Length: 169
Image 1 (cartoon, rainbow, N blue to C red):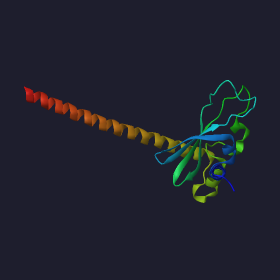
Image 2: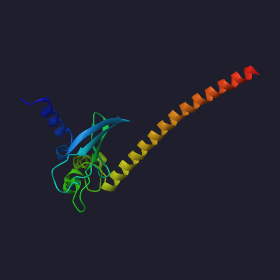
Image 3: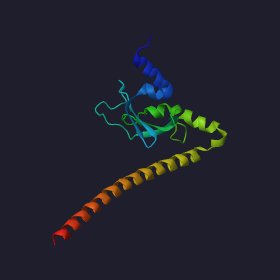
Image 4: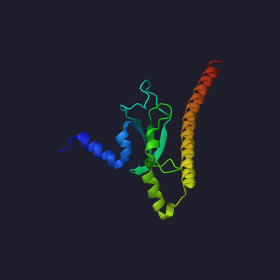
C-alpha cells in the first residue's frame, strides 16, 4: 500500500510534465487573478556541471501548461546555474517545451489539435504576450484603484481638518 507521499507524487506526475517533477521541487504555489503560479526549483544533484559554490539560479523560465480547475497554469522553472558551456535541464530536455513557444509541448500539441484554435507558433506567442500584457494592465489598474482609495481617504481627512480649522476661527 502506498503512503501519502507516494500518492502525492503519483498525482503530481499526472498533473505536471513528468520530466519537470523528476528534476524540480515545488517551493511555492500562488493563485493570482485566476492564474495558478507554481514555482519549481531544480533539485541539487551530485553532478559536476552545477556550480556547487552558489545557490544562485538562472533567470526564471515561465511555461504555460494545461489549465487547472478553470484557472490558467504557469510553471516558473528556477534552474541552477551551470559551469560555463554546460547545458541546462531544458536544453537537454527539449521535449518539455514546444519549439518557439513558452508552452509545455503537450499543451501546445493539444492547442494545435483543436480546429477552432489552430495557430502558428508566432500566433500562439502573440496571444500569450497579449494575455501577459493584459494581466500587467489589470494589476496596474488594481494598484491605481488602491491608490485612489488612499487618496480619497487623505482628501477626506484634509477636508475634516480644514472644517475644524475654520470652526476655530
